Length: 289
Image (cartoon, rainbow, N blue to C red):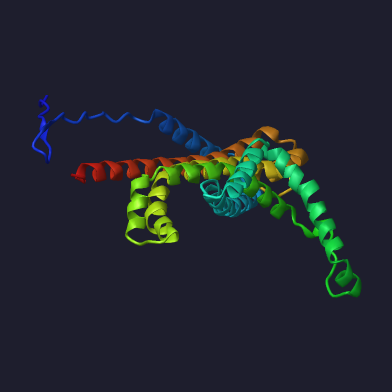
């Protein structure tokens, strides 16, 4: 075994040799891969599994569509809420904090039902009341609750729910940037918007990217709740198919398999991103004088 030799840093001082951590074999990943191979073998051998997979394949696109749109909207709203909580105006801070704390205290399923069956009818009633004159004159058509698609109600509910959690993620990333860098940028004559866009946000994004990836994976799993509104996602199609064929074991095996493929793949991508960002941080720290 070759002895570890101490290194000399840029200041000419001896530094402790780096501890080499032996990389462990991810047995859980091997077990998951074997489970996936076994399930694919069942699909090839058993024609019933192949029929179920084809019947549920349309729900994959719906699940991804709901998740991607809701997550993008939640990121935009969460960033605004984070800026509101970091605002110098107390009224803005209090309003943003009120929103975050109230929404975080509500279960996603309750919020789905509230938006779908309480919020949408109230919006329709408010619209018809506010524009009663133009509606009576035939200028503007009146709205009905059926005009609000259930898919968009589910997207709105997921957006509201996750925006409160993402607001805290963005706020932590913004506050992780040292205040000295903000003051230095301001002393160079940059405006508040330029300081945020050129100094704060690039560093904050590096911090919040891994948590954002984890929340995206969590939203894919929580998107199964939209089946309670009749949205034709993987869970809803599996529920309908199993109720009509009584093949509950086979159907929900396929449902679990589809969700695991999406979530595990994204989880591995997030872990790879975390390791890459960690290596960049170590290189930046070692390059600093």
